[in-house]
Length: 177
Image 1 (tube, one colour):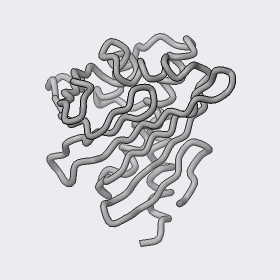
Image 2 (cartoon, rainbow, N blue to C red):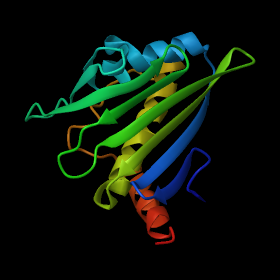
Image 3 (cartoon, rainbow, N blue to C red):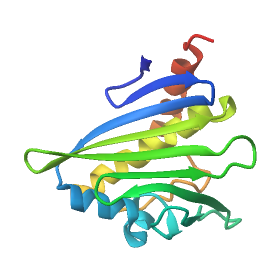
Image 4 (cartoon, rainbow, N blue to C red):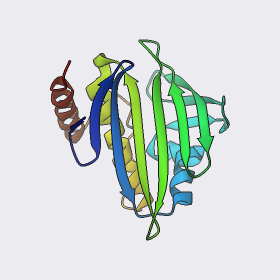
């Protein structure tokens, strides 16, 4: 794997590209888990999401853009306060796979490991930069550092987002083919 930052490791396998983020969050597992599955909390750091948190449960994600774009997912596996796995349906290629793992640490702290895989080559940089920004927002909101004010999926991109996307593109381009 190629390391892009202290938070992301890039790779490629027979299913496509993947990125693995690890974040140490200064909060108990229960609080982090709630932010991952509670629709009210998801709407703050991710996007408005309807979900049935059981294996096979559907997810409907609202991008909040001017077209009111919807995206769909299906929960594969869920172990409360430990593990969440779902496919994010993709019209342009294979369904992408999201895996959230929570590990209780002393403090109380939580090690969050997030793996997003089966990414099409076309979207490696933008998807990775997007998740990077959302994980930053999740941490900031858990830490009560920021108020959510920017819809991440409205088509606008900050200078930081543009720079992250350039970095991820360069890192993915450097992976062995």
